[in-house]
Length: 193
Picture 1 (tube, helix red, strand yellow):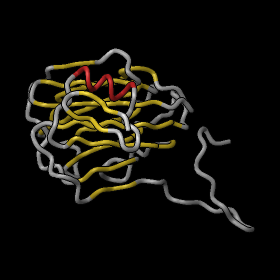
Picture 2 (cartoon, rainbow, N blue to C red):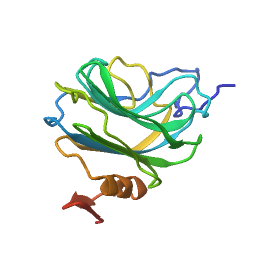
Picture 3 (cartoon, rainbow, N blue to C red):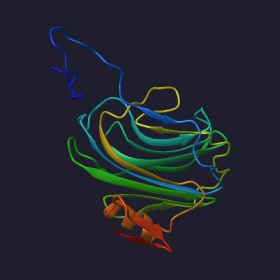
Picture 4 (cartoon, rainbow, N blue to C red):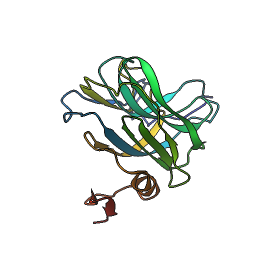
């Protein structure tokens, strides 16, 4: 028995395998020196799953310049920012993210000002010094830059603010009430449809 489930593969007679679902945006909006992102998802893997699971990641096609929302190997919702090959914000394990539990994670990064939140709980902040990620050329939904670190579950929504560092209160609000279709984050507040 597998430790986690995958989407069904409909066949008429024989068993089939398929590649993991992953989306890559190779022409994303232009990223600046600050950025924010949020995503809603449900992990199928148990908290003890032995691999990090990437939910949403912006990078320069390497591990040197990234901002990522992910689930850790201990099942924690995490926001990580790396610039010029150095970890500048380690928002690991903001909160436990249980198997088959829908959740929303939001993160924001700017020079020496970082935040991460899961489901509207306590916001983890940091003032990590170092160069912000530069040369962001790709956004991955459900995988890392090299096709590994796959998300094992369902992703229902992904949002990116490529040139905006949302304030800590707004990061918490977005993670607590992820914008719905037609929703808008403007002037420092979330406006529903």
